[in-house]
Image (cartoon, rainbow, N blue to C red; front, top):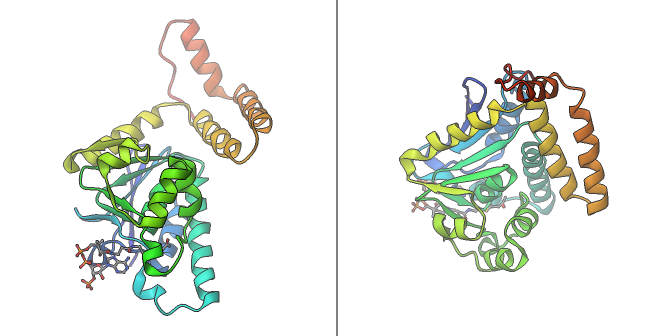
Length: 257
Ligand code: CAA
C-alpha cells in the first residue's frame, strides 16, 4: 500500500499524499512512495503534475516528528539528504509541478510546496517553518528556497519565529500564486495544468530548465543557457507547426511530445 495516490488524467496527473490520520506528515515511507510515484510518470503522456494532500485539513504537516525524535546525528543527516534528493527531483522534473495546498503546509510541507513550480492555496492553508521550535533547522530545503522565493528578510522572519501565516498573507508576500475557496482549489489547479498541457511540451520543458538552471548562475551564463535552449526549439516539429499556423492564420495542429 502506498501513501501516494497517483491518477493520470488526460495530459496531466494528480499525486495525492495520503496519510490523513497524521495530517499527511512525511515519514521515510511517504518519501519513498513519492520517489516511486516520480519513477512511474510517463512523460510521453503527462505534461504537468499536481501535488496535493488527502483530506480537507492538511497539505502536509511536516516531516514525521515521531520518526525524527530518536534519530542520531548521522541518521538525521541521512533523512534530510533523502528528503532533499527527492524534493530536488520534483523541482527539476521535466514537467511543471503545481502544489495545490489544501491546508497545513508546515515544515517539510511548506518545503514540499516550495520545490514545486507554482503554489495555489486554499483559503484555509497555513504556512510555517516551525523547525527551530523543535530544536532543528529546516531539513528539506526550507533555508534555501524560502529566501529565494520571498526574499531574505521576510524568509528569515518566518524561519526564526516559526510564525504561521495564512493563505492571504502567503499571497501578499509572494509565497503562493493565488488563493481559492477550498472547494475550488482542485478545479483551479486542474485548469492551470490543462492550460500548461495545451502548449508545446518541449518548449515548456526547455523554459522550465532555462528558468531553473539560470537561477543557479550569473546573468551572463544564464542568458547563454536560454540562448542554447531557445535555439534547440527550432529543431522541433512544434515550432514549425505553431509558427506556420500563425503565418497562415489558422490554429496549430496538436503539439507533440
Ligand atoms: N509528524 C507526526 N505526526 C503528526 C505531524 C507531524 N509533523 N503533524 C501532525 N501529526 C499527527 C498528530 O500527532 C496527530 O496524531 P494522533 O491523532 O495519533 O495524536 C494527528 O496528526 C492530528 O494532529 P493534531 O491532533 O495535532 O491536530 P491539530 O488540528 O490539533 O493540530 C497541527 C494540527 C497544528 C498541524 C499540529 O498537528 C502540528 O503542530 N503538527 C506538527 C507541525 C510541525 O511542527 N511540522 C514540522 C515538522 S519538522 C520538519 O518538517 C523538518 C523538516 O524540515 C524536514
